[in-house]
Amino acid sequence: MSASATIVSSDLVELFDTVPDYQDYSSPESIKDFEADYRIALGRLAKGWGDQLLDLAEHPSVPLSHEDAQAIDTLLERISEVFEQLNAFRAPAFDPNSEVGRQRLQVSDGQILHTVESAIGDLSHLNPASGPCQWLDAHAGDFQRRLRRLSRELRRRNRLLRGLDSSDSTRHAPRPKSRPQDSPRGRSKR
Image (cartoon, rainbow, N blue to C red; front, side, top):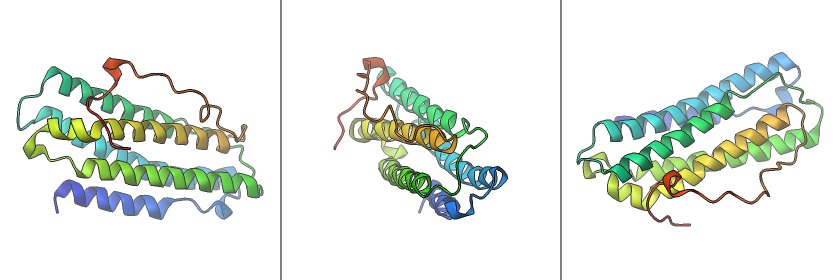
């Protein structure tokens, strides 16, 4: 197993260990503590993804085309959007006695964990020795969509913790069409 796979595996285990038990959300201070652990674990995973992509861009086994470099830059921008949502946590206004609120947070966590696992699966196909072209063609589009989904779900979770409307207004809004320069190359499997 490669060193990066070992790091990802230990970070994923840490993430599962830090998924909050909302029964413990009894005060704003306890919410901040549990959220910090969870968000740090998510951030470590996202950092690992960024490190893999940067390593691919900075030490390619074959020269990168302009299109390859642009696709990697786009993916790195999506990772930065994940960090923006991780850092957007504000003073919680979550009602710890709200069963509905806890259920919505649990659903959100399930979506986050599923997306993280899928993103890890996408990156598991990355083989730096063979160059980025094959991976970018086959998996970059899926990986970008997962990063966007992760950002949206973190935004929804932030709103829930702030006690704002629990419905995610962006969930049902039409998605903006990707501009060609914002789309990693390749076709993706659905």
